[in-house]
Structure formats: structure tokens, C-alpha cells
Amino acid sequence: MLLTPRNEARRPVPGATHSGTRSTRRLKMPALLAVAVSTCLLAASAPATPLGVGDRLYPYLGNPGYDVESYDLSFTYPGTNTKPLQAVTTIDAWTTTDLDRINLDFAHGKVESVEVDGEPASFSSAGEDLVVTPQEPLPDGSWARITVRHTSDPVYGKEREGGWVRTADGLAMANQADAAHVVFPCNDHPSDKAMFTIRVTAPNGYTAVANGLRTDVDRAGRTTTWTYRNGHPMATELAQVSIGRSTVLHRTGPHGLPLRDVVPTAHREKLEPWLKKTPGQISWMESKLGRYPFETYGLLMADAATGFELETQTLSLFERGLFTESAFPKWFVESIMVHELAHQWFGDSVSPRTWSDLWLSEGHATWYEALYAAEKADRPLEARMKAAYAASDSWRAAGGPPAAPKVPAAGKKNGIFRPNVYDGAALVLYALRQEIGKSAFESLQRAWVSRHQDSSASTADFVALAEEISGRHLDGFMHAWLYGKKTPPMPGQPEWKAADPRKKAAKGGKAKTAAKAKTTKAGKAGKTTRTAK
Picture 1 (cartoon, rainbow, N blue to C red):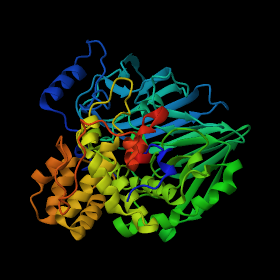
Picture 2 (picture 1 turned 90 degrees about the vertical axis):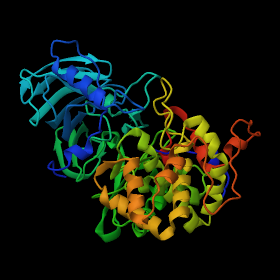
Picture 3 (picture 1 turned 180 degrees about the vertical axis):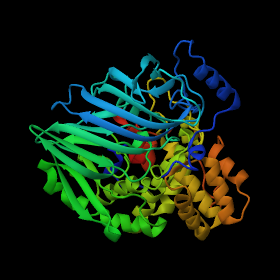
């Protein structure tokens, strides 16, 4: 995610199959938590309680006891974005322990019925969990199909961030970090990726687009149903559905890659010059990392003021205004496009194992955003990193070290999207490149996205791979950069100095780097679109 940097843009920036995958995709829980969870799962007579997989930043996200293999989502749009959609969510999952109950994340909608393996099941709410009790317990290692008929309400109070985004002519989705479960029941944590099929029925005159490739269009009377399937597992936070009076533009990318963009029909002509840049940007990214990891790509240009951009898998979400407001320099907008494109490798194909691993996604997307600006628009990478170094101690004091973000404040669940995980994390990558050399660093980047494709990976995985590729012991070096309260000395740049965060910044000083400006304009969603989320 990248927050749209409204003010910063006005000035130059300085310088799968199931077998063998289940255990690696699940978040490991501490032993005491695992015991407590097992007790809750097996105590059918106890009151329903909310559960989680033990994420440090979002303790009640995700649920233990099962591993989702696929979601089948069906939405019926009523023709207005002010009323609930009728929806059916079908989840196929493997159980990973004996289950008397199944906890699903679901927080905003009316549940009408639940079935488990075709039989009616009872259900209740506990916190932001939907707790399902099947007629018969589910033994460890069994296959289960859970079908929930519910509404999906696009209208929220001020306390809710993310989920459905109401556009000028319909809806889009922005589920990062923890809002997929306000749209549909799910196991809402990036450690449990799954395949998706998405069906949308809407009145004729509307167009629906979702992640992956379209497999069917069925027109029946006054409505049309679109069906989309993705070819790779996806985290719930990356799901995307666009419903609107839109035009879908098709073109071909490198090696025949099908591209499709979704634009408000009235703005098609003005947006086309930007959309034509995508094939070249993909080629540039492939020159750095290897082949694009998915079956399609494109931009969803929403007619809405979100305050962020978002890397929803295969169909990145952008505000239309980013491309149509004259205040934004062309080089700057292109670098934001590359930021979201880079996320398809870092964050989508390779997802964070926990939300504390977010720096792996945002830091890498920011890195390629900055590198693209350096190579294509003569915006020096070293100048940007030097500016980031000066601000790094302040970012760490405010938001925590890059790999240990501070827990978000109550009511600000997207508060983890701060400069420490954007330019602060890109600075860690710059330091690593300085330490191990450009050749080893570039080999590491390629190996990371290849080895962990279609899975979730952790900070420890990255450090281990860096040691393997470089042949160096890097644990101490990386620990200081990732977890230290103070920014370590920059290898090869002994003259770089970090500003003292205890000293009040001079007027305007807080906007001296791109990442800071991007964060201060988080706006309504509190997000950072990878400095565009």
C-alpha cells in the first residue's frame, strides 16, 4: 500500500497443490498459545470466543485449526453502493487439528445461514469472529466445505478502515491490512493464502472485474454475471472486485502477457497515455527480478478519493486523480506505478508471514520505485537514501524499527503503514547492498522471489537467504538494521548522519523526504500505498 503523496508531488524528491505446502504457509504459534487455542477448540460446551493466529500486531486476525485451500465468492450488486450486496462465501479447507468449532473472521454483515459439508450448522458471533459449530466434529486432516450466506455491506461508520470503497459509479475493494473480513468471511491473515473464484452479478450497464482472468460472462434478463479465477494463491488482503460503469481495455505485455485495465468510461481517453506505459514497466521489472509471477496484470483506476494506492493481486488499485491532476510530475506518477507493480513480486507472490514482516513488502516496493526514478528520470538513488538516513532515527522513534513496527493505536489499524516500513526499510536494503556488494544483492533479490513464489516468508527467511547468497554471517548486521532503536552507521558512507529525533524539526522539515510526505497524507484510510501501499 502506498499513501498518495499529495503535497510531495509538487516538488522534486531528493536524490498450488495442497501436498507439501500446508505446514510452511501457516503461522507458527508459541507453545503456550497453541495449548490455549487447542483447549478452546475442543471445549464445545464453552462460550464462543474470538481466536487468532498470534500475530503480534493483530492478535485476533486469522484463525488456528485449519488451512484454507480455496474461496468461492459470489456477490449480487443491487445497483447502488449504499445498500448491502447479497453474497455467498464458500470455503474449502483442510483441518490441522480436531475441531468442534470453526472460527472465521467476519465483522460487518448479516449472516443468514451456514452449512458445513452440505449440512446446516449453528453459528454465533464473538468479537470479529463468526463461530460455526458443525453437527459433527471435524477430525484432524479432514477436508471441509463451509458455505456462508450473508450480506456484504459497503456502508461503514467512521471507526472502520478499508473493505469496500464506494466510487462515483460503484464499488472497489481495499482490504489491507485487516479488512477483507468486513467484506466476506475468511481466514484473514497473509500466512494462509488460497485460490479464489469470484462471481459478481450486477444490473446490465455495469461492468465487474476481479483478480485473475475472466472465465465466463452470463447475461440473463436484466443482469449479467462475471466469473474470474486466479491462477496462483492469494492472501485475503489482496482480493479485488470492481463494479462500475467502466471500460476494460486490453493490450499485450512482455512474452504475450495479457493486460487489462479498468477505467471510468468518461475518462478513458485521458487515462490511455498512462496505461500504455505498463508493458515497458513490466519489462524493466523483469530485467531486475525475472519473469512476472502471475497470469495477468492491469490497473484499476477508481473514481474515488482514497488517499492511497494498493497492490491488489493482478489488478492494482489507483485513484483516478493521481493521473488526471496536473500537480503530479510525470516521473513521479510513473514511479508510483512501478511501486505497485513491484508489489506483485514483493507482497503478493511472496507475502509477509506476519504483519511485522511488512517491511519486506513495502521496503522492496519502495526500493524499485526509487531505482526506477533514478534510472528513468535522473532522480539519484543515493540522494534519496541519504535523506532517508537523516530521518531514520525519527521514524524509528515514532513507528518502531522496520521489522518491529509499533502496535497500531486503537481505531487506527492501518497505523503500521508509516515511513519506517517504506523509505526506512528501503534504507535497510541499501545498507545490505553496501555490505555485500551489488552483484550478491541482485542475486539475492532474484533468489528471494523465485524460492518463495506463491508462499509467505519471514524476516528470518530473508536474512538466512542473504547469508547463503553472500557467503557472509549477517545476523548481527541485519539485526541492528532491522530491530535497532538507532540507525547503524551506513557501510561506505561514514559521513552520513541521522538527525536527533528529540530535537524539534524546523518548520517544513518533516516533509524533507518522499516517504515522510507520503505518510503524512495517509488521509481517510491511514494507509501508505507502499508509499502508495
